[in-house]
Amino acid sequence: MQADSSIEHTYFEICCTLAIGTEELWSWFCFEKGALGVETLSESQIALTLRIFFEHKPLGGAQKLVEDFRSVSASESIIKIREEGLRPVLNWQANWREHFRSVKVGGTLIILPSWDTGFELDGRHPVWIDPGQSFGTGHHISTVLALEILEKYILNANYKPEIMLDIGIGSGILAIAACRLGIQKVRGVDIETGAVSEVERNSRLNGFYGRIKAMIGTPSFLKKSAPLVISNMLMHELLAVRHDLVRLTSSGGTLICSGLLMKQLDELSSTFTQLGFECCSTLVRGNWGAVQFKRI
Image 1 (tube, helix red, strand yellow):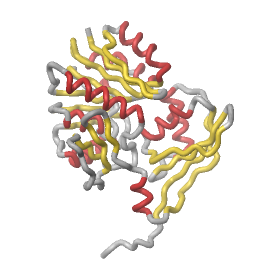
Image 2 (cartoon, one colour):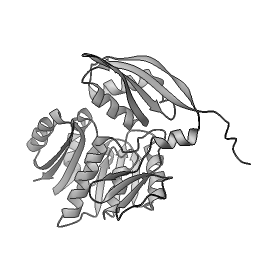
Image 3 (tube, helix red, strand yellow):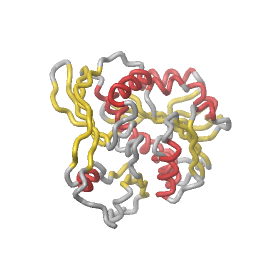
Image 4 (cartoon, helix red, strand yellow):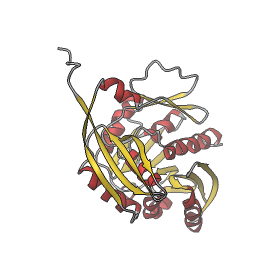
């Protein structure tokens, strides 16, 4: 029996007001929680109003989302929820898929939604992502920077590491890209309960089931170090697990950190320099940055 195309589909919308300067981190956080998009409705000299779109209502609703953001970002900025609720979508398939476009990243990668099978790859390595309820699609600039610096490192490395650790693995997009570029195995952790199923689904989609494994938990759950470690998380989260990142990066190994505002790069570099790393390269775009370290 075919589904009735007249059935009304919905999406979840949050309308909020926040201070200027908070929007970058807040938007990043929402994308990591599965937001489809963020739209600026109005802006003044001190505040702006955003509309944020989700496929489903985030667990606990908008206020829980704000509380989680303030917890992980150590931000005291006030985010006022003006409105939240389900909204009807006409022509659901077209509207839903319109949010997800194929994006070329770096020199060899391309991110594609699972249904975009007719896209011309132009010799690039495809990273197929099936948007889920808990994680974004990797289109945010912090993920793009992580992919670009990872790609550059792997392609230019004299010795290609066999295994990579992904701290905050999310949808598995960085792990999948690493496998496309020649890494044999990826092990990752994430504190989000939906991470394991998301990683498994996207790994199967790309033909890497078994090569990528994730578990729910903090980096302390991982016991063996690796020559390549990557983490795309907020500054506050990176600092909180810095000693695990040191422990998990093999001597002479590489650590890649993304999810940083440009103004935070010096602080993070200083922190890891004191912990026995040297900064090898930095990639900046807009207000965001990523850093590649080598453990001395």
